[in-house]
Length: 457
Image (cartoon, rainbow, N blue to C red; front, side):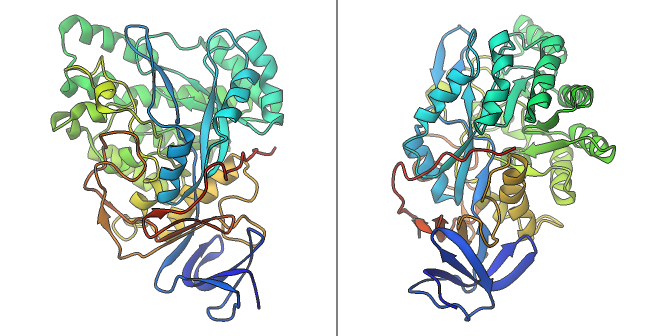
């Protein structure tokens, strides 16, 4: 059987199971899978001894993120789409999902138009969520148009990273109902403002604002409470609901119970909550690890891994935001610190290194949580799986090529990193729609070669 390109002889991780196969590629799409050695093509990539995975669909990325500081001023994260997409490609992320960000007083169409312009220089494909701060009349009216234009998911906050009131319960329910009526997906940042606010105020009054005090200011119960509220809003509205960056056992248990009762609910976790713990707030550079929700104890990390393995948590995503050290942690305490950390391009390599290290965590799990499930949940056509007709977005890596993460991976625009020294497996070859995107530690793609991927209904 002949084809334009064949990825030969690797362990191909497809939805039907992992098996050694040749992957045939025609016109940027997967044309078929054959037993090793049976394919013929003018071009060949030798994947023997390697694992072939679908390109990662990182469902939670922030590029050029505007962030309001405690003094009321605004700062913007360090990367642009040109460099962020290169960093993603180097780690086998071939599609990223960022946010069109509403500002106060506007609807939802204007932020979408701005973001569609921002993403033009991207070397990888980009899909979008909408980040909704205000449930004004125009914004609620814009929800159906947003969904129709390929942005089916809207994110709201049940608490913000710093002081500032989130939406009222009445406004939150109005958003959930509008999204349900439009056939979209609700996303929720799940922390409980009524629990966090008095703790932050008490910390400020007592001076207990050092980094060692940070985790206690946003305790595990605040996440569990907020997940319960988000799921109640989902049940009241009928809207499919997705809880982002979960970090606690209580959240996983809430989600598991809701799904047992038939609720259309999804959960996401992140490599930092899986691989790091709250002891980092007592060590070197503690400000680099400030994020919301905070890093947790070993008990909660174990619950997240179990949730990924049993399918309660369907998605792993980076929640990337690039903050250089002088902006990230400018003072001696957590109140001044900007929340979030860089992780672009490390999602797949970090999780790949955990295959065989975490019980039940397999190559099939990696493919499911980094590609298949995010593409399915956010309805991205042609993405997330190695199957005939899908885009030829492929990652080839050698399972024994485990290396420590450098402080600053390639194309990062920051001078710090929270994953330094952890094991990861960098890809040998990355393809997007059959084009060579990265190979042997070099970016080989082209600026602006990425496409906007519209999420379907």
